Image 1 (cartoon, one colour):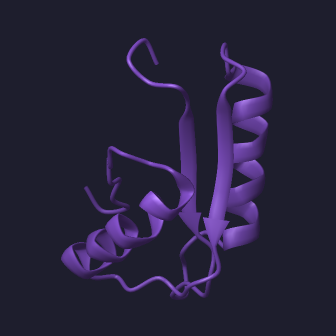
Image 2: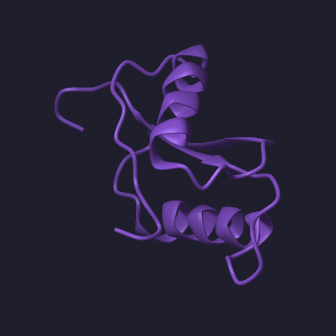
Length: 82
């Protein structure tokens, strides 16, 4: 946070495969973490209603395309199976 104006926690919020955590549950968990654990005021949660692709490269490329539209200049991609 020392080198940025803020942090955007951005999720795909569409359909998931059976056994994965539903978008509504993930979104609420992130909201609670931001509310309870954030020490900064410039942390924002956002999302895009798009089904998960389950393709690391394809999903990373989609993220890289969508996030700059929200003002993001750096991308860190998480993975469910890493």
